[in-house]
Picture 1 (cartoon, rainbow, N blue to C red):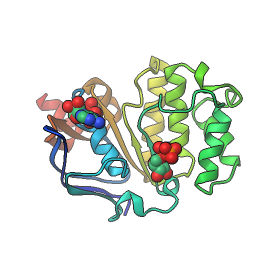
Picture 2: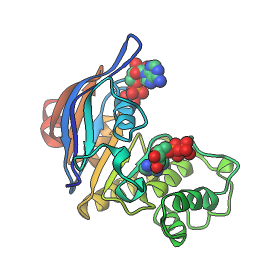
Picture 3: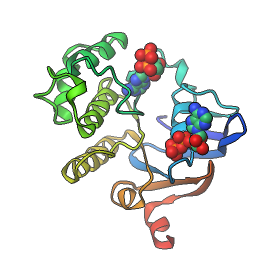
Length: 220
Ligand code: ADP
Ligand code: ADP
């Protein structure tokens, strides 16, 4: 269980082939990096996993099921896709409380996850006044609300300062150490070298490598 499986996953946007026959498995208990340059197809792949984009062909399943079959999604899969895609007029508390409510999660989780991401004092502030780094932390908090076994993070350290990057790395490693499936995208090998155990590398929508991070680093 907790396994993410892609089988020949493919997505065309008109004539653009964004994702081209991706087949790979992401396992629990380790951090799996999803590495590729901008435009490689990482976000499109993660969006298909979350049921936010429909594949042209192929399948993406979590625990053997497509994401839309999970009733209260946040209990199974937590995701950070775009930290800026939030209602800026809301406070962090209101944003997380709405997510907790719509997912049937207890209100007390809001303060718990804010503290987990270092925003324990920022709950009453409006998201519009947050830096990108704070929005990334808030997005990570949202992903953690349901205490899910599977976590997807799309470029989560963009906008974080060096201290924040170290913090995020330790958090991802701790979540994986708890037996969760942690899948983290990045366009920077330097970032992944210190964060991931295993790497899935894509370019132009195609799989380039699927191996332990040390093996890839030794060849790169
Ligand atoms: P990455 O996350 O690795 O930067 P994306 O999945 O965002 O890559 O993009 C993969 C390719 O698909 C790029 O060529 C991008 O321009 C294209 N693309 C992404 N989203 C759309 C969209 N909504 N409509 C058309 N093309 C898109
Ligand atoms: P809406 O546009 O209705 O506010 P969202 O874009 O927030 O919906 O969510 C679309 C889908 O993604 C929903 O099924 C929701 O449960 C799921 N979702 C939203 N945020 C997260 C998250 N942080 N982690 C996992 N799933 C999420």
